[in-house]
Length: 317
Length: 317
Image (tube, rainbow over all chains, first blue to last red; front, side, top):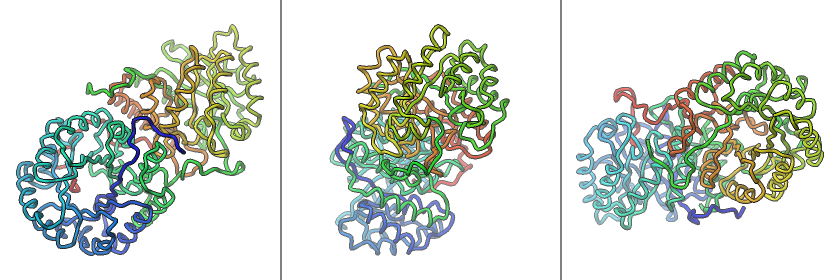
């Protein structure tokens, strides 16, 4: 193409969260070999950052009970950055043992969502993070932080930007070098993205900022546009749009990686990914979960895939 | 909310194309009373501009054979602006007779799509428009022009911006006071939107510019964002996302009106619409066509629709 959007950064880095965020919400256990096959397909498509798995109680989240095994399959890929979600000290010990590059600690910007999600107050979550930070010291494993409900809470409604800023400041103080704003239930809007990104700038220091949007209300990629307009270069997404919104039965969840990569590439923002291979990986993800996924580009194909003139009927305009 | 996105216009005007563009591609005839009920619901939701129908051959497009009847139902709504697609002189005569506010004439920016869509060359299309323009003179019926495949052609690939500019100039010369760029098969990207809007500025004169995107590759609302960033205030959309992409079986077509209205309102851009009522109209559209439509907000509900804390299980972040 060559077409660019003035003001956008010249590159962006995608973190694939499908293997964790996506497959964790599947009703059945996805076999370990299928997970490995999917991650391999995503590596082949050029992705290099992965939220691979979650070190959680296998009783609470049986879908992630093969965390160490999945990680082991990619530990020798030195070009890949592999993270895992860690809810507590036990998970942190297992994650370090398994050889993650970074642990992702997570708490919500709203009190009631944190209580619902991890059964403790936000203050207690931060205390737990401090323990994990001490454990991680000297291990070579980095710390990342996710701020859930950063754009709104399904129980409380609006979340004040100051709650997000305070939480990010606490994360930075704990040594987290990468902070993600999570749009847990699809309440982000472009205006809120601009607001939060601008408010966070003074507190981030050397930590990088990532945005993770859900397409629950159709505006996931418009929010990415807002992030790009503010110079944000890290985005999280899920191949095919794997992973639903836990609050709304028919609604979609994560922005689809291939749709995001399409938007970025067609806006002159380099991602290092190969769209045809991403589409194939999305098709693989559909086969693995056995149902249609919400990603759009995987259905329509790349922009310049032309059709023979006798292949279609048109509909006047 | 009150949140705004800096640089966006303070208001936008939506044209609902579902009754024509959406229902025309339905496999069965939607009963006239259902069409009227849907348009009434959209009026009740605050929409005021409608592409109501199409004056085409009832043999070629039986879905629109009740064009005059549907229009007649709303002719006394002086606050509503009612247009119809008109492919030729016979259609123009019928449209004027039926009392449309404006006729929409359409041709493609690419030669092969025009041949496929209306079976004549682009030059011949323009000649036909000149005839219609003479017919319309003194009738009180205005002329609008749609430029199909304005962002790319499914047969030819890229469409040069100069083809779009030349066509718009010809439209202005024919007296068309409102020109729509149609993203016929979902090939628009933000970069192309910026490019075309800027290139068209010098030729539009007093004619207004509208953008009509398809969400075929997931970036429809990101393209709206690009349009807003350029100050464009007219957008076309379809309730629930009615209407498919004729080229791709599983792909979606028009941007959903309620998703568009949601994005605009949450960005501080006034539309005069009521989101709850738009959602109800989208649900009505789903009942009328008897299948799930691609609109997202109709499934998830407004942003601040909160859930009781015991209503859901969460999924860690």
